Length: 221
Image 1 (spheres, helix red, strand yellow):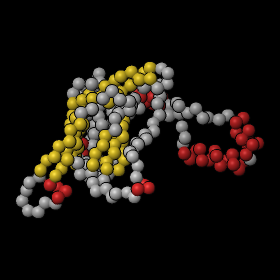
Image 2 (cartoon, rainbow, N blue to C red):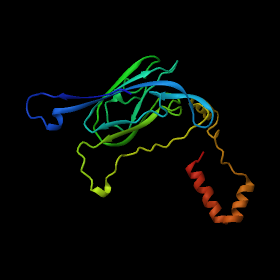
Image 3 (spheres, helix red, strand yellow):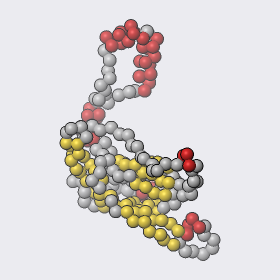
């Protein structure tokens, strides 16, 4: 990953706040491709970013000017990156078909440019077909502009970003095709009448009915 941080001086007439005088430009170069990965003892071809699965952590500071160059090396697939939860111009939102953004064609590139206006822990992911399921997602951390020094007992040597996700041996496109056949295609928790009667015997009718009611309300598939 190539990362460049530069300082740019903003000049103008009138009063300019000190925070506006110096804007850090934080620049990333991301290459979206397919690579073999092995998480389950079997090797599958999945989407990687700069050779990583899932995509690498991106870090900014509130007030930065983000410049993110994205190269699509996928074969015969448009791609995209959506910056989940960030406040930014419509064209930079990264959802194909909205605000004039048409996605990134195969073997082409697109540069996202936006002012980082908030802080917190977020994530970014594809908004094209089943590419998110195939590994096109990553964490995004924005640190506050002015951080208060923590007392010694709250300080740490470093922060760790923990990102939870699932993995399926079927591709995102195959999963999507299966769900189009039936919304319950992956419903592996269906119970038989015998299962229900066993729970009634073990937990009582009231508890069993309560479980069935909650299950139906949650539409757990």
